[in-house]
Length: 102
Image 1 (tube, rainbow, N blue to C red):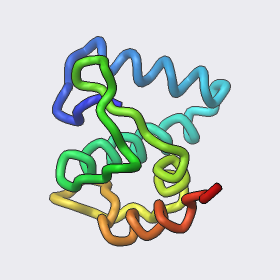
Image 2: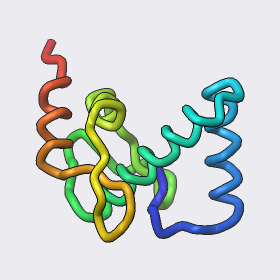
Image 3: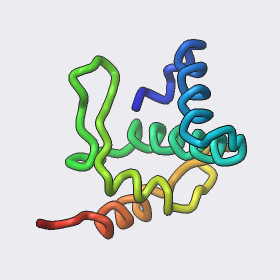
């Protein structure tokens, strides 16, 4: 996951290609996934989600745990400064709800 302020053309192209591959040409689902990934990137810029999100050894990248992906899929989107976003408290509650303890 990269910083939401990274608006380089190559980054956008990579996101689109990944979405198309993941959703087998289902443009609506690819778009929905992209909006949710952008919303979580913006949330991570505002809120510390450790220990569920950790920095990668790759510059500017972070690794997301499975509970974060569950929250990305399940949390309703809200508006934040005119953009799709996640409510931080609701998002964090969903993360905790999907943590599996061994």
